Image (tube, rainbow, N blue to C red):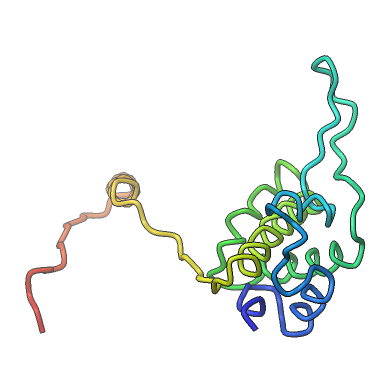
Length: 160
């Protein structure tokens, strides 16, 4: 089952999701509509620039529970892209960060069911400029501590 490939979801939870939304999620024209129906989308009740409530809308409780459990499992998985989203914890708190991860999982579920695609984990790519900046900062720190640092770049021209 394609949904079980998403970090945090297993075969049982994938079957429950399909039972709730259908095999193609055809009821929902967009991932935002499905996330709203589940109740994991961010809420914003605002009038005249005064925010009355940031609570998420009430939705399908069983689906919300499944996605919250999947989100809790996904943020603990090694090498998972959802860990990066979970870094919002200091700003939002655990529950709201889990709700954000559940929202992302709900949108991925819609895409997989609606467009019949497979989940592909895309690892974080290293930015060469950021890596060079970090390396120079670490070298400067080592030199400040009194170490003699010599840089030897790996030979990338050799082939096996």
